[in-house]
Amino acid sequence: MTHSENAVRLFYEARNNALTGNVSKTRECLIAAAEEAAQSVKTGETTGAAGNKIGEFVKFILSACREIRNNGLSGEAMSMLGIAGAEKNTDQGEWFADMFDRKKSAVGRIHTRSGSGTGFVISDKGYMLTNCHVVDDSLNSDISIDMGTSGKKLRVLKTDPVADLALCKLTSPYKGEVISLAIESPKPGQSVMVIGNAFNLGLMPSTGVIRLEDKLSGKLIFSAETNPGDSGGPVLNKHGQCVGVNASRTVALNGSEARGFVNAVSIYKVKSLLERWGVAL
Image 1: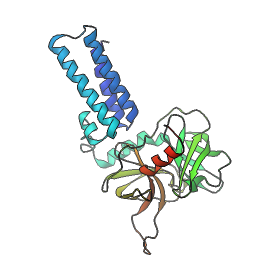
Image 2 (image 1 turned 90 degrees about the vertical axis):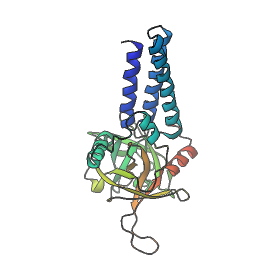
Image 3 (image 1 turned 120 degrees about the vertical axis):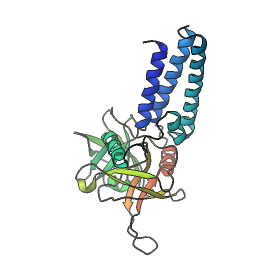
Image 4 (image 1 turned 180 degrees about the horizontal axis):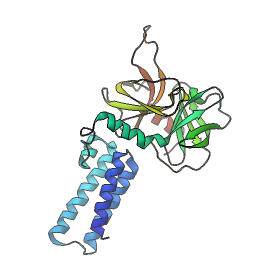
């Protein structure tokens, strides 16, 4: 395979990674594509007008890399990759169904002495996030978690009871799907999906809409059908990136019963705590 052919292959591999919400892999493939394209000129494989086009291709790829580095898989980045309208050309139900199918392997069903909940992998090092209230009775012991068809053990590393966030780690090596953290905070009105283990029946998706992100309190409020056992599940944007950690249904607000409100730990708060805990993904 020539350098130019390799560049094209890597570019489309980057597009596929963007569709799954994998930011780091998208940039990695784009940079590799730029390097291969540059090599095609350097080695004399591509010359003349074709070489000039290759130069423009490299500049374009590097511009896309800068956008992804600064803003993640933003609408602009997806547009540059030619896939910004993918969700518009697909029935929304099919879109979320496809995302659930791709991301569910990174989500696990947590079992403790007092009940069950949900957690999800955020790093290939095996780091996982869940709610503090899901694991607070098991801080000094391994917790069992079902990942797909296999059972694993989970160790609690850090907790913040006020934010209701817990950082855990799988006790065995992990090689599988990872849910990346969104760079951009969600905006009110954006569609989201939460994956959870409602009533310990198995992983199930639920969709809703962002209502409010309160950076001061670290809460994200969205609308969705959630139930006991869904706690600790990822709230995903349309790119499959985590914008929050599902925490609880809001049953009262300002003295009134609140309908269609779900609390989550906002991605802003999650990143702040990870930084405070000294965790580099």
